[in-house]
Amino acid sequence: MKSLFSALVLFFSVTTFAHSTESRKIFFIEPKDGATVTSPLKIKFGMKGMKLCQANIAPKNKKCGHHHLLIDKTPIASGQPVPQDESHLHYGKMQQEAEITLAPGKHTLTLQFADYAHLSYGEKLSETVTVEVISSDNTR
Ligand SMILES: [Cu+2]
Image (tube, helix red, strand yellow):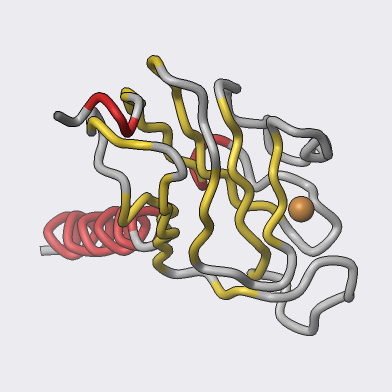
């Protein structure tokens, strides 16, 4: 009976743990992975289990941050600052969507979540999709 009890405790702690890691997520609402798009292109940021807070203002709630869009870049390791340049765009005013211009061809877009000080939450709070940009006068 005692071992059944420990097995149950173990089962519940494992499922609780799995649930808590799974419940935090950063993802693209738009565009979908593999989409063919025209430029400028609209992007919608999705999130679950995290809160938005403004950049550069120390928050009360530590589990908050803002979105970053990385163009043709890989996710930033946890704790590392997200660079500020034309391929690392910051949305520190809590924006949940953006419009960007991309050259025709294949691009990867990475949505990276980072804290108020622009320190990355790592690959687990990022998502990468590939899009193909076609010229808008190519649509016939
Ligand atoms: Cu930032």
